[in-house]
Length: 172
View (cartoon, rainbow, N blue to C red):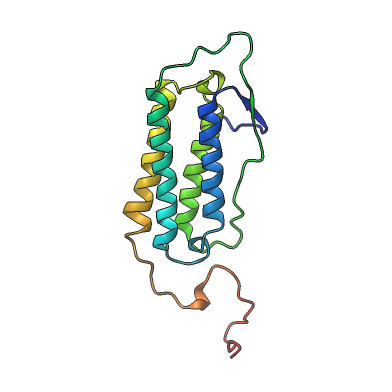
C-alpha cells in the first residue's frame, strides 16, 4: 500500500464520508478508557462496533443508488487533511494497537484507491478491500477484545514506568 501524503484531494463523496468516519473512530479509540487499561471495556467495544456497522450500512446504501450524472468538466473536490495517528505513548492494551493499525490501514488505503478519483461509488475491488478491513475490525473486537480476558497482573508490571525503584514501597 502506498502511504498517502496529506492533504489528499478526492472528488468522491463516499470516500470523503468514510474517511471522516475512520477519523472519528480513531478519535474514539484514542480517547477510550480501554486504551489505558489491560482489558477492553464493553462500552468502548460497542462504540467501535457501531462505527464498523455504520460504515457497512452507509456503503451498502451508497452502492445501491444510481450513479449521479455529474458534470464531466469539474466535480466538487474534497480535501482530506489532518489524519489522526493516535499517540500510543501511554497505552496499556496492546490489542487496541492492532485495531488502530487496521483502521489506519483501511483509511489510508481508501484515500489512495482508484475510487478516490471518481465522483461517487467504490469500484468493486476497492469495496471488497474495505469490506475485508471491516471484517477484520469486527472480528478482532468480537472474537478477541471482548472474549479474551487479560491476566490479573499487579500494578508493578505495567508497561508505563510508575517511578518506583525496585523494592520500594508504594506511597500510601
